[in-house]
Length: 238
Ligand SMILES: O=C(O)c1ccccc1N[C@@H]1O[C@H](COP(=O)(O)O)[C@@H](O)[C@H]1O
Image 1 (cartoon, protein in one colour):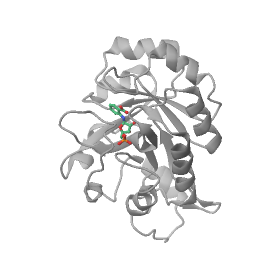
Image 2 (cartoon, helix red, strand yellow):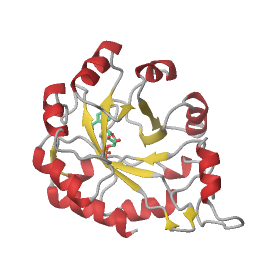
Image 3 (cartoon, helix red, strand yellow):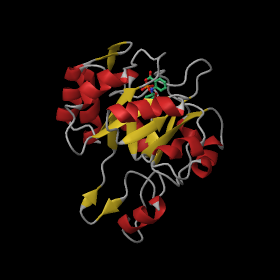
């Protein structure tokens, strides 16, 4: 489906540098170039939500995972999400949740997308009647290709750094050479991004979207509005 959609967007015979024609963020239409989407994750304060929205973020993430320094309760997220206008996606991030935990959040706020960042099966992710993305913590070659097959019903595959002790939000980069140029799903690049390296990351990987958390913080769990603005501006500049 994704491949078919993108094939219709790519001008016939046109080769895009640095990645496959059909599945990179540089797929072109007669109307111009499709820009890389931006998700800012781990929001906990209304002022940060406003900054993201006013700078043109495409998606905002709330972390429903207790051990994270960015964790919010469903009640907090519901209050923060009230200020998010139409056409900005509200994403809920979970790590190995129970079905009841996901349903509790969904009962409280209208998430547009579920992000599963643990070891959830495709069957688990698929049961909520919502669109979802799956995170892969990349450790070795072949893992991403395998995930494209195993999670083929996802709306995107997020690739993040592997860490032995943490599921994500580590601020670490991984070896982008492990990302295949051919992609069966929209690829969301995460892991250690910041305004300093996101342009290079987009140039090399050509992702559909980028996702950042730690790179736009002043200290663990507390976002920095200036860094948020710089990050989004940099993505749009590229
Ligand atoms: O943000 C967290 O605390 C978190 C916790 C558990 C799993 C994922 C988490 N965040 C996601 O991790 C990636 C990379 O984050 P960073 O930019 O390297 O800090 C990103 O997708 C966050 O959404």
